[in-house]
Image 1: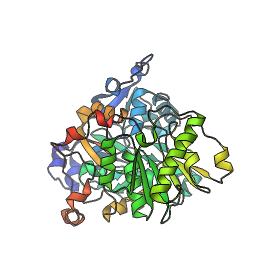
Image 2: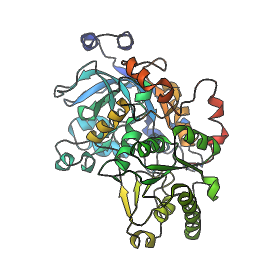
Image 3: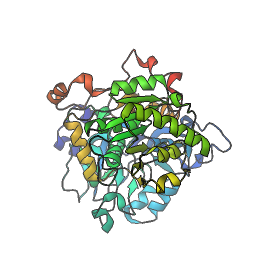
Image 4: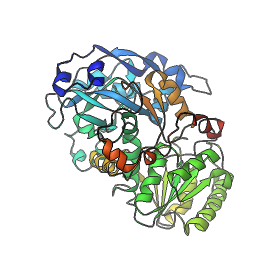
Length: 457
């Protein structure tokens, strides 16, 4: 099958080509869940395995995708350190619902919530997709028989994150996804560029642009914590596109320089306010840091933030609530520094502020988001690419926050740069614009050393 895919086989030829009984995948083993007990540094390179696993059966509403490339998200880190709880509990709970879900409850967990590739099989109930289609995958699986899903896919109680709360994820040569997860791959992007989009860009779109999120408008001042991270770098672009004023906070001079290349209007190194580490500041320190940061933002942007974009969590959330202007919004989708947030509620209720919880994106939001890539309005934030064999190193880079933007992983694609089917569109957008954070050969040492290890913010 790999030879057929890389050799340009037709849809009919792919449909006739036999599938392997096993495939290569990045996965965890259930017997390893206690391996980090009493360990301070839970090094994901010790728990992540790359090896062969059995090919799963396909349900009627599913497709089998040959994954050309994937990318690392923070949920892969959580999975690989077995915190806040081992993801095998998710698989067991899902498997207990019965039917085809029982396949997911296995002693191994194939990870990965991003991917781009080629459909090689379709289930009997799939109508809108066929073998040979080039696709990217939404990280969200929803139950289309659940009423809430038809109002907003993210409100369904049985909504799950693929490759985190389900098995057979995207860090592999093959993956199983529902047809309702598919979006056409932007034809001007390479496999690895396309694979760096869906989870982070879709999440940022819902947080900022969608009516389900902050509903950003022109002129809004938007404070973005971790502005060179996978989520933050897309948020900067979306604020710029929407006529807002992005204010990016980063943790080192190297990241500040990268943020300027991305076009962020206002760049703040957290050392300017004396902020460091992942531990949350105490109540008095929170207000002190908030006042310092607020003063800088007012001086440079002309006012307090209308929106605060916070996926950092425990280390920043109290400051976020303090900083948002009267009637402003704090929108959150995660907590990479810890889930237990502390803030002074007086600054919330007395100033009529709101906190909006946001999670991934529904399929319509993701389609609208990817349209912006096809229009050349959004650019991939891929910074570097690893092979699947080196997925442990790639994930470690994210775990230690020594990365910019998105870290790509080649799966079946033998080398970077493949998968472009509309070179004309790529040329019109401009090769120099497509990867503003990309670490090019010969310059990698300037971006991935200790300078980027200065913290997660």
